[in-house]
Length: 127
Image (cartoon, rainbow, N blue to C red; front, top):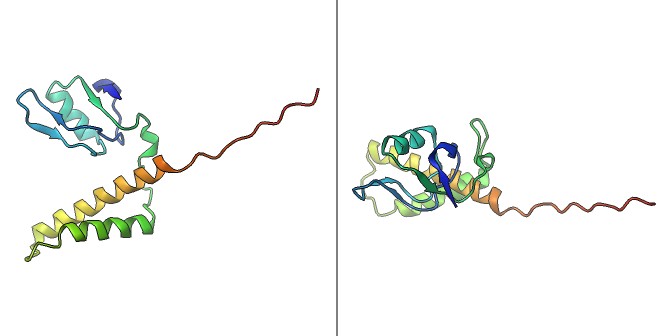
């Protein structure tokens, strides 16, 4: 779903890579938008963005703790991706930490999106 730039909110997930007019990548697919991303898009004159979900309420809010099982899964996923790095410098540790954080946020968001909605049954009033 394409959303006009002025309707974007932090927490929305980008559905497709966003490039500028020179085909330079501005934001990657799967990125959870932050206020700085929206400012960047406005700066480059992007008019609309494809997003996965239009409800930012599904993104983890500031202060919301990601469950331990999701955090552990994210750490395992990223550790596997970093397994070929032979020298773990301070810079690489920082990058890995950011990667774990982003993977955990993405996994948490996905768990909210894929949770089955509870069914609500309404009883008919007796007439």
